[in-house]
Image (cartoon, rainbow, N blue to C red):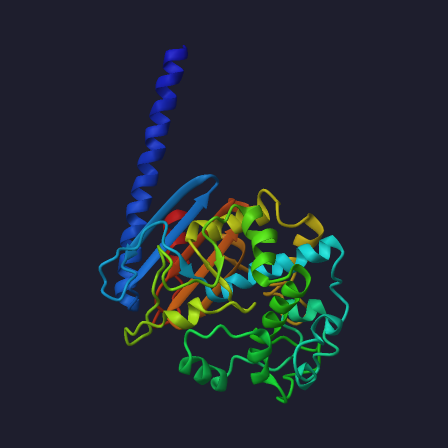
Length: 351
């Protein structure tokens, strides 16, 4: 009886491994095809579906196109990092250091000339988390030009926010929704005010708790296992991304570690308690699809939570499907030519 059971268990194991191997091969083919069609040099994909893991890579990550993408390759994840900044802020709320519905002014008034950022003195923490602040955007053409002139410059919050000074607010605080990077630069500054630096805040409140051993705030160009990002003309556009230590997009990571963040948030609950997590996942009355640093959406496979990110030379996307206990992450060192999320393609094959 025991021998028969053992044979059955072994047979089931081999069947499972065979299925996973076939799925991994299929996803690899799809990723390579996507890269070719969308002019992407390299990509890393990670999925965990009810405990079953698929991890595949494709393409290259260096200007000479000699170094192949590996599972340990680290990518700049752009705005996908907003989820991590929001989680760190919400842990401060949980600790009693911050209040969601109080004005942030006492925490930011030390920023040079911040009074020139109109309405900064009245917006609340919740409003900048869910993009209902109406504050003017700093990430405009003028900032982009300045950043391209000095691609390796690590802009301080004070320097970056100055590009939004004296501009008119998009709307009065709490009256509408507008995705605005200024909000998260302010959040990054607040993290630094309370924990010393944004690096310390993210390391202690997110990376270490989630086991994200490869994640960092910004990156040095000499660091190993680092993907270069390439613009649509094939030019190396990495320096601007690696230099980013502002709260609107500060993280460099592997696909697996991005998945670890989602699992720590939703499965092990090592980052936030239920109350703050529920608020993080709840959209505002002005946009039900965006909570506190978290996208909220639904498709044919069910409801999911996540956040995409895009900056010159880099693309990231992550989704967690609670009903399927599934997380998917894709990181790329190029920008797709058209809106055609690879995670839709992957879901078709995996779910």
